[in-house]
Length: 330
Image 1 (cartoon, one colour):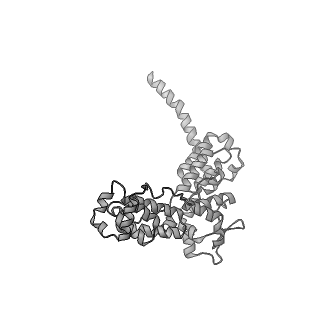
Image 2: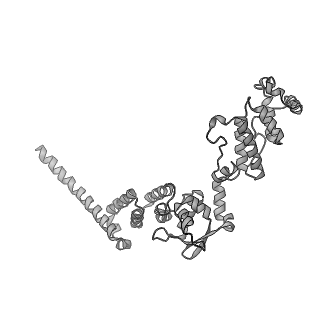
Image 3: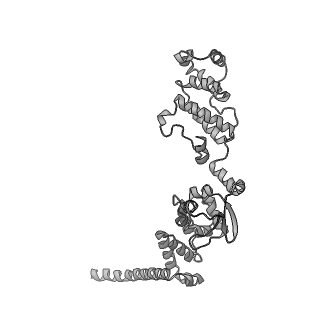
């Protein structure tokens, strides 16, 4: 369960069987997980365990929880159980139960003494607990700082090595998973491209941030490079491509619309290509002056001509339809 948390930032001790959440077995498991969280300095997991125990301890399981906390020397949780027992709303029912009679004498004495102390409203009351970094925080720090010494692979971009990690690359993209399974270079050096295009260092850094910790914030010029990346590297979802598309649509200009058209064509994004063509048609007088127009493939030039022809036909039909309407009235 601790490994589940380390890899996913989540825990589910019931494994989907929600009706088991307050059983003695699950409460005991969470106590042991709490002990490991303390041992491994996992502050967020400590907080999750305490919150879970606070919500799970009730009239039926509090005495067993008290016994286990006492046996495991978890004073913090034991204190919560003791104060739960001596609350006005629960004290009489608990001390009159058959389970209470099975308690060791020292615990019975503690309960009687604690009856005179103030009640604890929460496991965290009066304790300043650090929330601790999230999984994204840890992976961000790993990419930019700590991870360099654990790198087991080098990605080369225009001759410059970029330290990286096989496990993360394989877990996040099918492209690297297939490479590492089948034909990983023996020297662990991989030259980076996105299809036939070599991305800029800035845009590839944006791609690594997405791969390592899901960050999609980037300038428009990076979105232009990375628009085709999800199609090439085969991510498990299209979140990056959706963000790049939105980012480009909001920041498209006469100067970059032809590049956006090429990127949309390469990644087979039909809606983005259609959007770029509509803008080219609308501002064709200015777009036609761009040097990049001469570098477009024959197929894309034909697409632009077809879009211009369609627009011209639509514009001609308007006066023709108007005339027909006037003549029919006569």
